[in-house]
Image (tube, rainbow, N blue to C red):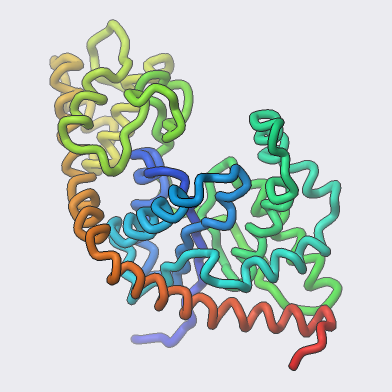
Length: 334
């Protein structure tokens, strides 16, 4: 029996700060395309967020286009989803200002990400870095998102979003949907190939530590081959075997095999065979994404057309929420 039940809304955004890693892909992006059937999905390239560190303008433009192409390349259908660039929808900046006025200074000052980034870049502790969570709250609340897929590091930001929305609703009546964290199929936490106790990161100074989603097969094979393991030469999951555990996690994500099945598959085999199989599985997983990205990035007019359509679709929803909030606050509207 068909139901016309309204789909729940999901919002996800990613900054255009370089090419995502295999960790970003297996941990989050791969799940994004699977959500389109069950949810009304809004996917944004969060370029407004990325200027807190003053990127080089030409680089920001290039990376925004590339990140947009990559979102389509991983299988986010622009007909099924709303895929857009954040700065193309003015309502984000407008609602962020309103929400700044409903956020307590102490609340914003408690954000651990602000403290961490201020310590890392003491020469540029700007107001944008401080007000980052209110812009993130605007991103989420504009689309009346029911769910937001978040990593552990964004948990605090979702909490403050909920607090701001509840405060606003408490003052003016029902305006914003209170968002919940999206707990989907657990995306693996992929660790560094060189230091398997820390998370894989695209900003790692050691390029052997991470795999980029656009790396070619030879590069993938080389990086997996040089991945840190241990001297035991036996493939099984156990505490203290961080390097092997990480490679097993990657292999499991790419093949769908359980750890038990992986242990059986490599019974009596050494790390050479195991690494070769992991590299082959990763290369097979990423090749279609890379090929599609290369095809799309060569067709700028198609990407621009998709961006424009996405921005219009997003703005229709966002402006409705913005007008509602402005009316509640008491702005004189024409």
